[in-house]
Length: 219
Image 1 (cartoon, one colour):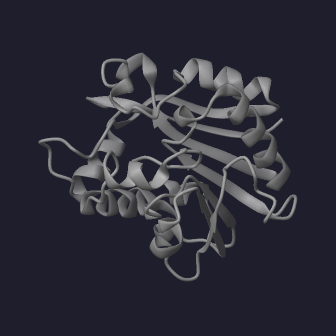
Image 2 (image 1 turned 90 degrees about the horizontal axis):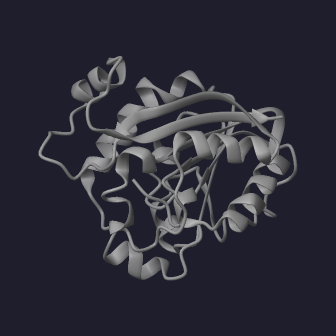
């Protein structure tokens, strides 16, 4: 579950570190229907940053859907009527101001320097409607420190505490912060099945969870 929003060699990354895996489609289809649909209405406009294979944006139900990634393959992976854009997550000039209800980013911000992330957040605030929100899913360094730098493109370390603080320092207000939301990867000995995913989401204590979830709104 990664997004190549600002990777300098996106093609190589998707050919080596982040190769296709059909289990991701099962995971994201279930997450969209069983969890993210609570926060995204069918009438919303939704943007995914670092969309990669577009598993989230293809499966979420929304009136308008946009995907951005440096990887040119995002255009091929985006299902109709998703509008895909090849470019930086920090440059959303193709979108009007105050036009998006929800911005979503999965496994992206750890690939950005703090300076890049600050600019990205400025662009997110510009594109969000006053009532809009930002949803983030990504590795939590507090729980994933052993594997964190197995990915050579990770350049920033965030826990759920530090990322929430960074968002607030950049004019966002955190409305939900879950330090443990999902396991780090689909590459495990456990089967990826919709029923098991729904059960996992329901559990009050999530074993092996090393990814965080944060929802924030413009302050």
